Figure (cartoon, one colour):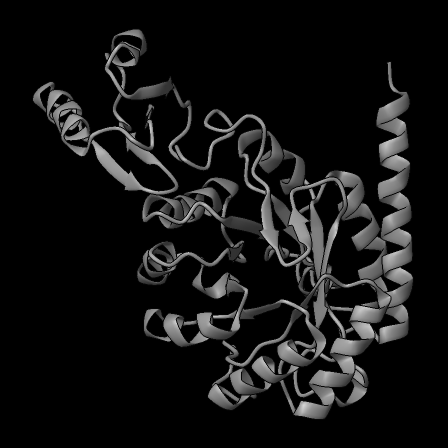
Length: 339
């Protein structure tokens, strides 16, 4: 159960309500988010109508899931997150594109201009790269972050980049408009808590073997520490299939849309691992209801230092943009004409 308090509710009154619930043997979690919220996960014998009578309580929301703040029960209307000129969770699909890794200023700048011209709303690129092998390219680190800051200033594109450790967040957040938590760190709870304590939006990728409930509970960690600007990203899960890098679970899009109010993006690059399949799966993701896409684009994929095989050329990305926008328009017309 969630007890949402008015933003001007006296802190002493909130504390009295907390003590009232604790006196009944209930665990209470006080969330310092956009407005004061109390979460009571053990609410079996609580009376919502009785709690609603407390002065300063705006509403009481019974929640049916282990994830409370991320549940659609809490925000049936859905969450929208503004990043630059893009509205994630709005009517138009948001497009995030760029190379897997920052390699050089020239590579990053040329790619940024190309994806912006094609219609991308944000630039993605990794300065820090979690790699399966310790001998693979690990990213340029702080040098890469400085290049991202330069290209962001020159092109005007907001930046999405990965953060791998809690202590890196303050410096990465100086450059990034959105902090990405990658699949390998989805259950790095120290990182999730630290991301929740800072105000920048967080793009949370689903772990490669994570259930949907585990993914939503990871989002709950971020929200429970005060940051409600969470964007979910389906990027494929590990199955027995070996013809693709991962199995892109597009089931997850409508399932999460039903369970949660958080916006959902899809990453067809990691989801397939092959540029030949990225555009078809991008179209399918939008048709399934995704709020946008995050795709890898490289000016010369055959020379990429990482993930070249799954990276689109700028020309292929421009084609993808045209096609996914056509799908989005068709869906809007379909819903508009529906009885």
